[in-house]
Image 1: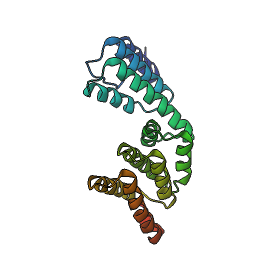
Image 2 (image 1 turned 120 degrees about the horizontal axis):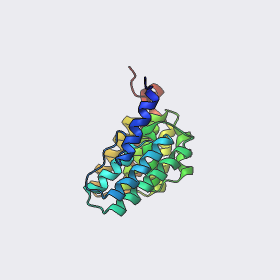
Image 3 (image 1 turned 180 degrees about the horizontal axis):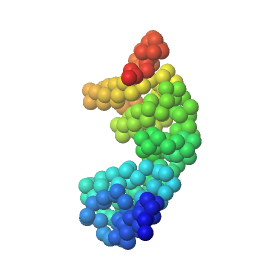
Length: 212
């Protein structure tokens, strides 16, 4: 009897579940069986609704690497799963996995769903620019820039069609100024002011990344 590809896929998934595994997922060996099973259920649920699972696997590995106990790791993965769902809801159901991951990190850093939506509306240059913007926003908050200041500044840059090059430069410049003794908020304001003036002065085509 010939077995179709759908049946084979279902059999593989069932066998993986029986062994306490999820197809294509490798979790650290240190986890207790109960924790492993709980995390795999979260991963399978996320996959079922179309959420990216790689960030969940990475969060688990990060917790193990940092020596966190199993319950703390499980709570972190549960929190990230919720944030990924919230991020997709805030961004209109986007399927861009990189953008979803960056948006979830922004929510975790204290950015609200409403602020995410405003940043998306301001991003005339598309999802790649928004992803880079959110990565930069999270980096700034990690450097102790107030969330409100970081969000407002990033929105201003998105409104000027800033791209990955400008956001990468902003991250490096703010870090440099903080290392030199400037407060995080002052460093951001100074560097964003320079970036905005440069963007205003540049021809529109020069702000876009090269294609081809």
